[in-house]
Length: 468
Image (tube, rainbow, N blue to C red):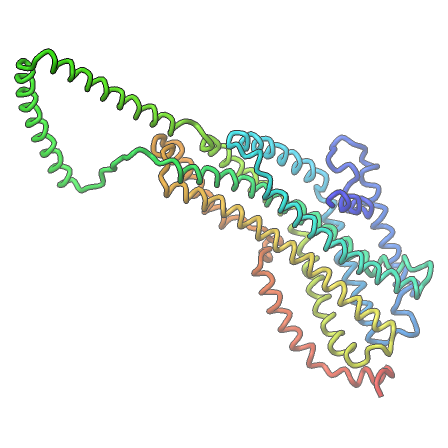
């Protein structure tokens, strides 16, 4: 699926052709990124200046239709030009850096999986793959329907020249959605890497449940109690010294047979001590907890990759979310105040109304997927710190026997606490890309709709001959 999206991105000039090769031919790489925007600008200014091949210049298009068409066309121009300018900024360098860092992360993850013996557990990966492909199929189906509706309607009106109005109607929203698809792919890759290291952390957590530390008593008593215990220990040692002298005196009176039995008993005790030491050594041997230093480094690298991805695609989310907001509000307005009243009386007006509704649904689906995956990536990064904190609470043997593990785990949880307040997927700091954005958007849309729905459209529709 990602290959299909990459081919579409290269075909319409959103990414360079050889995006992962820095030393390739510059003209070949960027020819489509120059040619397609030039074709769009020719179609856009040609319709405005020549006043041909546009819905607004048809005799059947009334004032409401012209207003809807002009808003849709100019909003699309703002979206496409903004995204195109941002696509030129370090676009090729980003792809090279992302793939390089991702390859380094995958090498370390594979090594950690071999240490933790997780190469055979692929059930979760299969489930994730099914959901991943189903989401992409759904998104492609929605876009195919939107493009088919627009192209068929324009071809029925303009014939062989339908490509000209299509370039200024659906093409900008298609280009913006494909860029968000690139963002979705890269965030899903980051989220998947977080899931993999969480699986490794969870393996250490499960081993901490099964493997208990040797009993150790930490002295947390007050100084007065410590002195009392020291006095008791000294008294015990003195009594033990007296008893030892009496035992030595009694040994002289023992028979040789009793000495032999005592030697046998002593040998059995030595065997018991040896067995305990062997068991203790077996419990503290090196297992998956040896991955902890590498996992902490991996977590930092994936967070750095998140910052890199957000810096590349975050600015492009701002015009796309703005266009989605405006199209959705105006689509609801046209559907409720125009189409419900005079639907079916003007085919061109019906086309514009349905075009708003279709692209509002399409852009909202893409925006929701972006927000969902950004939330998943943030939650998976937080889950790593929660698992490490849970391991620390269990006080496993490897942590108590080696201060290095404890210090690293404590530093990791503290570092993530500061990192959580520093970074989150966002649109250049204007809004956070999480579910709170949906709430704030719905609140703002409700305020605008309350004002728009109060307009009385009956006089305008009567003047256009749509109402009697």
